Length: 208
Image (cartoon, rainbow, N blue to C red; front, top):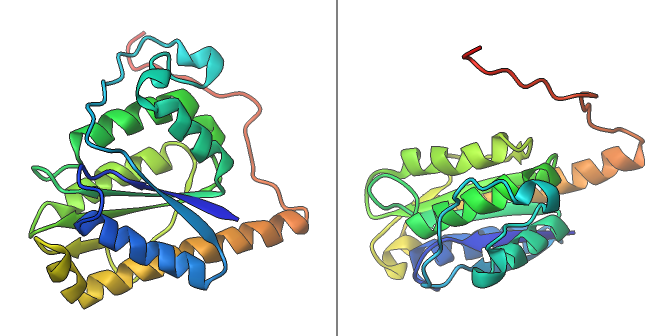
């Protein structure tokens, strides 16, 4: 079993990474491997709603900035954890563009995989950013995994984040909980338990 961990911060190894590394340790201690992928500092173009991904489950522009590579990793992974710093009570803009394109193209392939989110802030805006991340997971029928508290850490530097003992424990437990859900899914499959999937999706517009 393997979990993809997406570091949505423009800074590779600062506060957000510190929290995600704790989640990775929680996974590792439960016997589940993980890979932390950093989105880098490069600009990420937003989704333009062209719909070209409907036929391929890949973004038409994904070869240019690595989005399709990330989609491949997410499809291959058994679970997903996404982390972001808090910018103006929301997630990093590059991460939002990434997730918009990634989930618009291939969200159906993520269904029934466990997913979790972590946010990092100096002080406030964490719950709004966490809600933003969680919505990508639940709209895709991913199994939203929680922790001992809202998955967030506080601090303006790595040293301060490490001092947030509760936040670090919550991050660790998030990884441990994702591992437990993965093992539960594996046991369910071995017992012949399958998810309930409707035969046909009902699409309803509010204006007719």
